[in-house]
Amino acid sequence: MNSIVDSRTPSAVADAERWTAHNYHPLPVVISEAQGAWVTDIDGRRFLDFLSGYSALNFGHRHPKLIAAAHAQLDRLTLTSRAFIHDQFAEFCHRLADLTGQELVLPMNTGAEAVETAIKVARKWGYQVKGVPDGQAKIIVAADNFHGRTTTIISFSTDDDARADFGPYTPGFQIVPYGDLTALADAVDDFTVAVLLEPIQGEAGVLVPPDGYLRGVRELCDRRNVLFLADEIQSGLGRTGMTFAVDHEGVRPDMHIMGKALGGGIVPVSAVAASREVLGVLKPGEHGSTFGGNPLSCAVAIEVIKLLETGEFQRRSAELGGLLHEQLRALIGRGVTAVRGRGLWAGVDIDPSIMSGREASEKLMARGMLAKDTHGVTVRLAPPLVIEEDEIRWAVRQLAEVIGAA
Ligand SMILES: *Cc1c(COP(=O)(O)O)cnc(C)c1O
Image (cartoon, rainbow, N blue to C red; front, side, top):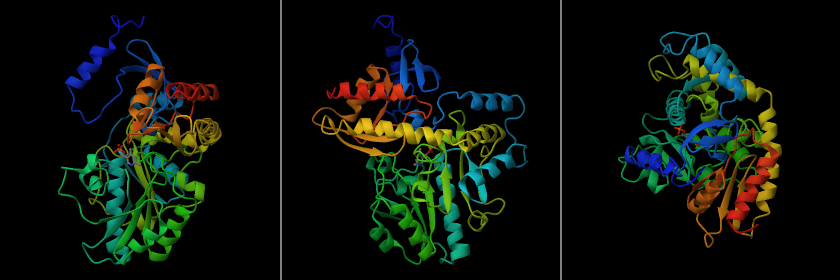
């Protein structure tokens, strides 16, 4: 059935390459259907999804409750713009404020827009509340960060691919090494309005900071009257075994930045949540989005938050993540040089003398498992949180066989 002659994949791959900008280097698979942790391609082959749309699909593909919420809302109301209020808006904001322990919520669409919102709000807070002289606000970020693709955000990227030839760059950012509290403390000055961090760096290879780092950032920010902006776009909403990655250190940031899984894998939904003192600096006309907080987005996100309120997905990620990490660690020294991560989220470094992360991802694909490399040697594993124990065991066995450890 899957003979080369009958396969529709090669020409579909060629078409996709022919008609699009080459800003991605996708694996040569053309997906047409999905359910739960599995996707099916146009040739009828099934693959276990170990990427989950970079954690946009934490609840799996087409979770029945999320699909039902989307269908019901499509039949009633899809868009009003924020010029008017709709009947899903308050419930979404209220539930998300409760989930984060914050007072106010501002919805947007993509992750990058939520990060831009955080930057604008922090600067405004700096001028209006902290009293930083006009135009002097400084935001401290970490090396190897990933916060999105806008011109301001790539201005403080340390990844040459993301940054080169896109200048001139937005000033007002200082970069310090990730996980280094002393370097961070040294960088804070009277003009510093915020520290913007991923609690676990995803694109950098699922880098978990040293124990106590996030708590230390919290204490430093309290001491120096600086906002702690936590980019939980990839690490949040159950991925690490708790609702947010900062929860592992019992830390509440001044702002939660959320995206990806908030839209349930159906619509782009992002948001920031913060105190009244912080988000209250915005007045009508100063910031906005045509689609942000639209009825369809809110209806889906309300259902996402309800799923998280059950605690089931956090529990699955913690328990099954324990199994995943235990099994992956057993491969260290047998083709794997390092394993990092938390919950159902792992960065696996492949010994470069055996193969690259890309080669490993291609070989996994040939065996029915979809994962993606990052930064040369790392394969990133982040299955939907609905994955089953035997599927995890099967997936690690595929990886072991691909790198010759089985
Ligand atoms: C994906 C991601 C973003 C950007 O989100 P988009 O929806 O792609 O704009 C920002 N920060 C982190 C940590 C991410 O993983």
